[in-house]
Amino acid sequence: MAQKPSIPKGTRDFGPVEMARRNYIFDTIRSVFRLYGYSPIETPAMENLSTLMGKYGEEGDKLLFKILNSGDYLRGVDPTLLQDGGDYVKLTPKISEKGLRYDLTVPFARFVVQHRNELQMPFKRFQIQPVWRADRPQKGRYREFYQCDADVVGSDSLINEIELLQMIDDVFSRLGVRITIKLNNRKVLSGIAEIIGAPEKITDITVAIDKIEKIGLEAVNAELTEKGLSAEAIAALEPIITMTGSTSERLEKLAQVLAGSETGLKGVEELRTVIKGVEALGLEADLELDVSLARGLNYYTGCIIEVKARDVEIGSITGGGRYDNLTGVFGMPGLSGVGISFGADRIYDVLNALDLYPKDTEISTQVMFTNFGDAEAAAAMKMLKQIRKAGISAEIYPDASKMKKQMGRADSLSIPFVAIVGESEMAEGKMTLKDMTTGEQQMVTVDEAITIICKK
Image 1 (cartoon, rainbow, N blue to C red):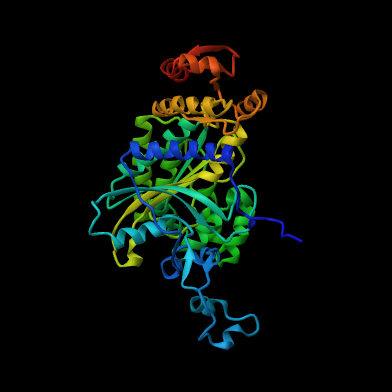
Image 2 (image 1 turned 90 degrees about the horizontal axis):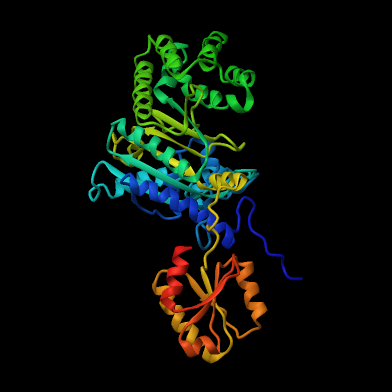
């Protein structure tokens, strides 16, 4: 019995309609990236595991898709590593040297270090490519998905943060999605850890409070207790992460709470500068200061950004932040950068849920020529060439079939015009152009047809 075709869990096929919609999203994001002076790059789907391991924390390492070495990958492997379930950590580097990229930021850091002599600093790049995570598939979470990243490295200026927030606002207002941009600063989180007397627990604290929306305050406190935080420290943390009031009021309260921490105050000052800069330029999005926002990744050192859709219940649809030493692990310390990443697959789900695609997104062919036989097809193809030369997407029905069948194709594909070329049209060197929406038809020259189609 033939095997039933299938694809791995957490991956998807995209047909022509979906691709038209996805390309609408990618084209929108790409045009905004270019508008702000970012240049495109691409990196390979697979990287050396040595490049990827240790950059995403312990959890991230587990989610890397490893690629088995080709040939006899067990040759030379110590048999004891394979016994009783084996020693996964020691075995992996022996049988796998490469992995699929987990995000676009670490490959970008590798790219910057490898090509540093050719790059003009500050370097502004964007990258739109798929990434892979060996995660448990669920709604809005896939094992293969696209990221659309923009980063600028080689500059400490907060103008970059202000511009990235404008870019986010620009993209989503073009797509018609109402959003909330959440903002925090890693220095504020470090300051909080200092103030409550647990600076060495910064990672445990941020990982736990990042989940406050999902699991609630009590569960967060339980997790912090489990990680060894004292009851006093947890009690001191609570009023900070549950702070209310307007953005400026909360910044004021934060500055008072963090008065004893130089790092914390620097974080508050950076937040003030960015928020003030963005508000002076005007945003369509809601901007919200969120002290619990940590975005699990270990490499953020300054501003942290997360975007939520206001009208659809789905996770973060864009995120990012400032990192001070991402290239340090590749032997180039001290290079500061800041970047954002649009989650194209979640944005796609949001636009689907809200039906926000322009009406003509899915129409790829604008005019279809009929085919009534060899002579008519030859005449139609000459006209077709001229139509395409004018930049209009056009096709010819490949077989000489009944009119009803040909019209049926145009109808089912929502092709707006049909060009009929029969004996009488051939005699005059014209076509009968039928508007499929109104049903009107008229005999016209190729140039007249071009004008009519372009006008519509």
